[in-house]
Length: 273
Image (tube, rainbow, N blue to C red; front, side, top):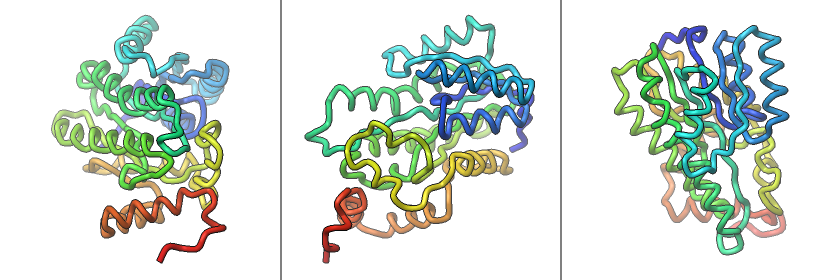
C-alpha cells in the first residue's frame, strides 16, 4: 500500500526501548508524528526530545501502565487531552516470565496477559473510530515466532502471542477494503532488554544469533509498503524457516523440541532419541 507517513500520527506502545523505540525512530525519520507510550517516563521523554530535534516532528510522550483494566479508554482520553488524533497504531508493549508455570507468580502472569493480549485489543477498539476516518491508517501488532510454537517455561507468554497473531489475522480480514490495514509482525530472538528480569536462566533465549530491533522494524515497514500486505510477516530468514518447519512437525514433537531449546541446562544433557 502507498503510505504517506507525513499525514500519520502513530501511537507506539512499549516505545521506551527495543523494537518500540526503533519503530519510533524509523517512523519519525519518514515524517510521521508520534505518540509514545511506555511506563518508564525518563527514557520515554528523552527519546521524544531526541526525535523532535532530529526530525522536526510532533512527538507526545505519555507514561502509562497498559496493565490497567480500562487501558484503552484511559489512554484515548489522555491522547485527546493533548489535542491529538491517532491515525495508526503499533501494539508493541509486552513482557515475559521465564519459569515453569507451577513456579511462576500468578499475579505477574495475570499482568502479562493484560499487557500482552488484552491491551492490544483495548487500544485497537479505543482508537479504531478515528483511525478508520484517516487515509491509509495501519495497525501493526508485534506477535512473535513463539506464537507458532509451544514454549515450555514461557507458557503464558507464547499463549499471549498466539492470541495476538490470531487477532491480527482476523482483523486483517475484516478490514480489507476499508483503507485501514492490520497485520502482525513476528520477530524471533532480538537484541533488546526483553530477558531482563524474566527469571533465572532466561539468557538461554538469546544465546544464539539475534536480530536487531531495526531489522524487525525494516521487515514490518517493508511489508506495510507492499501493494497488498498480508496478515502476517515473520522477521528473518532463519525465523521463517523455523516457522515452516514447525508446521511440518507434529505438535508433540514441536513441544518436546522446544522443551530442549528453552532448557537452560541443555548443554549438559544428551539429546533425546
